[in-house]
Length: 391
Image (tube, rainbow, N blue to C red):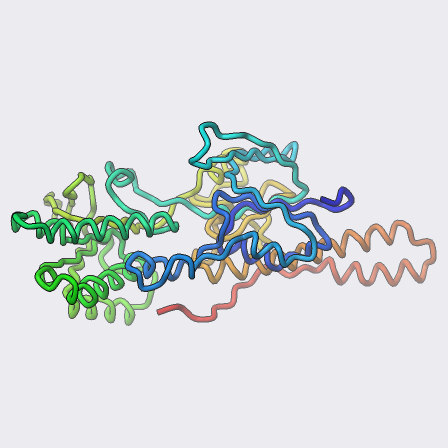
């Protein structure tokens, strides 16, 4: 760490943070990365990894592999940031490694803090989801789904199982009709109906896949054409879509659901994948509470057009940790990371020119530096450019 350079601490290793880490010029700053996971996860292929279409190793890139190619050394801590003190410009981090009996706490100082901690899974307060459901956000979630899926199939193949138990075990339920839920239901169908027919011919025709969505239709954020195409395709594949249906409770072997007519019934299941979207991360919520007047957004940190957190001069944020006009996608987050790294370069040049201007004595030299300074001060706000979708 160079004491003459300002220190940038980045929280997270998702799309936005990794893009920022790759693009930030470490000749200008000390860079410190803090994240509970020490790798970047290519999330679009996460559903495929649950059924073995792709290997988990092929969608993971270690952060230390990325940072080793930087011009100067980067510090990487596999830990979770649990608190931020904007007044003293310090953060508190904890090591939550399972192998350790206690969780060491450490304090780190920063000149600039960049928050890219993402968001956490939203359960909408439905009891039993955390205990009996499977999320689809991290590598560990994919492994859990794979193990649960194969357990259901193998148990259904055991002799002397009742028809009711076989039907329950082979009923796979996906809750959430957004992009993640739709993608996983389709991936699940291809694996269970196509691939497993050779391995478990007696079970292939008994497999059932249901998708539950509380809104009137799936993919509410997409075009009507895509919605109709998806519904038609699922009908051909015998994937049952339950719209206007809410999950009220989750039990070990059944769901309690409420339909549009207010009728309540139970739905037996073997595998439950919960893909209902995200809610604010714990650290982000703490920060919002520290700045109640500026942080009025319902979810995520409110930032200005330059990705600076409202209410604090030295904290920036991007990706799912923020509340902006853009959709919470990897494409948006990646562009935000690149933009912010470029902005930090501009900030360094601006600070260097201001220092030169103070030292300059010749009027012509001052005029020349001032022109450069006027140009560099005009940092353009972030603008997203859409490059298409993986559909």
